[in-house]
Image (cartoon, rainbow, N blue to C red):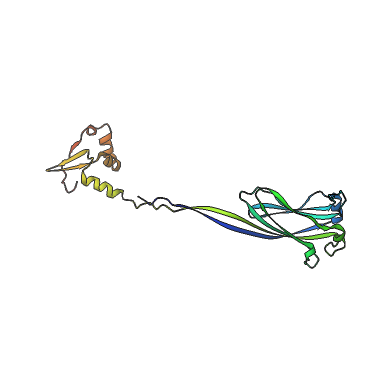
Length: 233
């Protein structure tokens, strides 16, 4: 018999990362959308679809119902449902014409997603400060999104079962030598040979017809062979 199957599981942490750029053109026109969330781009990472969205001009109220200054907000949206929890590190920066940024134009957040949802920056930058900055040029914004995703990956391993080498011929040989279960005998001169009808029928269409067909020998357990030497038989 072969060894029983052995099973085990392997759980490893996988990490994926991407740097995604979005060019927002016509920011002054987008401001008319106010706090409406606008999808700026969509990309795939770690087997999931992500979307980068922004709100051009958000006006919020504080606890005293006083209006706060208008702000530009960004958010990262997990579009597809995760099968396992995923840990996300999200950094967003505004880039100037030289492709550089500064701490005031960079923010980062972390979160573990167990289902679809969003991760956003409230009050990313005041619109008045944005208009006066080097990041808004020709009414355009260049946004850099750096995303790192970590998630567990579990797989099952089964030890391969090795089949034993074929040995049917050996078993049939032992069966013939032991004469166990023999149900037919052949008589030649002074010698007698015993065998198994089923094996002979499987190997020879003549014997199959003789033992299991309509021939007379199908009901006999003793067959006489003439004009053949025992050595030849």
